[in-house]
Every structure is written in C-alpha cells, then in structure tokens.
Length: 259
Image 1: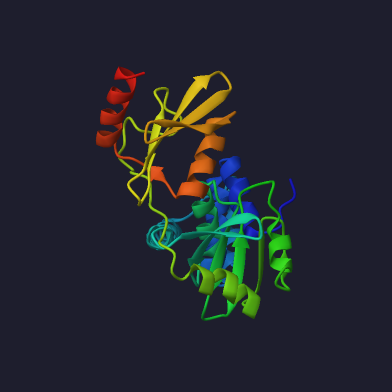
Image 2 (image 1 turned 90 degrees about the vertical axis):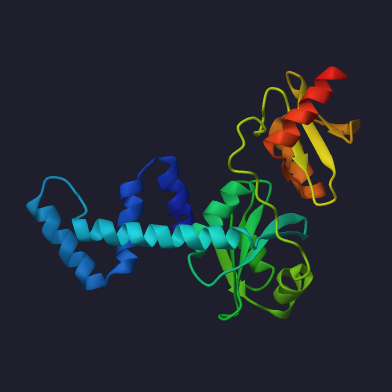
C-alpha cells in the first residue's frame, strides 16, 4: 500500500490497528524537531522496545481530547452538496484537516469526499476514505492538486461559488441518534429513517440480495442489492437520518401487523 499523505496514514494505521505509530506521528508535530529526534534516538539506544514517557502520554491525551471536541463541533456544521456529479460534505475549519476529513468520511460514508474550507487562509482541502474517488482530480478542477486521498487548492472564484456561496443557505446534516438500541443500520427487522419534512422511510430486506424502501407505507419502485446502496440513496436524495427507537418500535409493530 502506497502511503502518500497524512490522511492516507490515518486510514492505514486504523486498518492495521497501529495506534502507537499514529500517536508517535502526533507527538512529532507537538514538540520541536530537534527535541523529538533527541528523545527518540536516546530512548531507542537505551531500551529494547519503544514506549512513551508519562509526560508524553499526558500531552497526547490532551491533544486527542482537543481534537475530539473540535470534530464534534464541526460535525454539527457539515452540509451536503452535489458538485460535478460527486456528493461532497462541506465544512469550515482551519485545523486538524486530516483527522476531520477521516472522521467525517467514516461517519457519513454516503459522501464521496469531504471539502474543508479555510476562509482565513483562502484554501480548500479535500479528503476521502473511498477507493473509487480521486480527490486530486477534484482539486485539479480548481487549479490545485495533491494525492488520491488528500488534496487541496486555492479558494478561487469558482471554488468559492461551489463550496461557499452555493452551500451557505443549506442546513447541516442531522446526526444519527447515538443511544439507539433497536433502530440501527441493517437491522434484521428493517431500519427506519426520517427527514426534516417529517417523512419516514423504512429500508428492509425482501430477499437474500434485495432491499426495498417504504415511503409513507408505500413501496418505492427502486430496489437495492445491499443495505448500503439503499441507505446511500436515501441520504443523498432525501437528507435522512436514523429515527429514534421509540418511533422505530411503533412503526415496526404497525408494519408487521399490516404486512
């Protein structure tokens, strides 16, 4: 696997469960270069295995909590926009672009990529977790470039129009309930979604390789070969989120009763 960017590294470390390497990289950016090199060389010469000392652990824990708080805040500001045939999640941020793009991409996998607008720096960054999307091509549209998973460009007039002016009036995406116990993705009994128009959509499996959607208890013509395909369709076209358990239980009981 070719590693070409910090975003790519984050995905690689998570995939291989190498959190120590991820934390070591974070420490590199938190202290000076000379201090980092001196600490690591001295420690590796004196010990058979690598470790973080107590102060470094405290520094890293504080930084991770800071990043988590920042991502939670920015998650509530994310908007969705189709641009040039791809679905982008657009958010304004001036720091932690790789961490932010990675986490938002995982939480909203129906989005092809995350566009991060840095108004102060007049820059635009692109991040993706998907193999079918090359964000260097997206950046190239605006005179920028980069890597497959991470790229960027200046905030040109065209980029400003697409990612700022055209998204300004959009409402942020709603988050899925965190405490649901029953209404979860790909539930055996089906999954209930809702949107800001108070419409409800029930995504359920009808056969081994077929999922269907009921909208207001009327079955849509479209069917899907996987749950994920059906979810992507709903999130992109209707701006849905998972309904809470209480609404789900009432719906499922009624659905089974009249099935």
